Image (tube, rainbow, N blue to C red; front, side):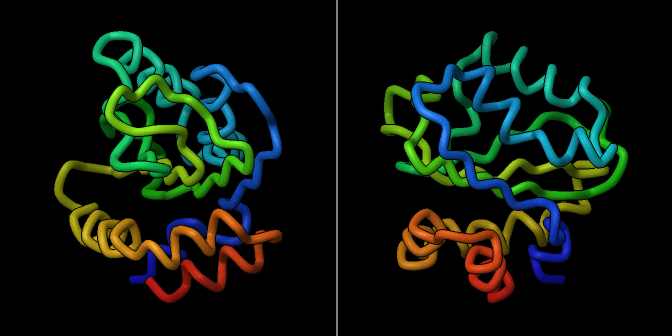
Length: 149
């Protein structure tokens, strides 16, 4: 299954916001999932709580974040949201600079999302595609890149 199947046509957000705080960025990074009822607000709250407890555990590499929480924190269906922060956002990672590309992961259980994680890791390792997604001017451009993975 393509990761785009878990994102869908309404799961891509391009944010032009500047000087976002962590909680504001996380609100945006989960916005379509909450609005569509794919996750409960408790899922977003769990990501924020874990960040407050242990820091930005979901910042994976320079430019890239993958916010997520446990399935029992409010996942209603397996899904992803892609968010591009055009102006970058400081998620307080000491090892990585600002985040420009975020994929919020919501899995139904600890095992079923392994293929999704593998597909995402291939995407995350493809610097050309990551840079193209960040530079994209439209959701359609981003969708075309994601459909390759």
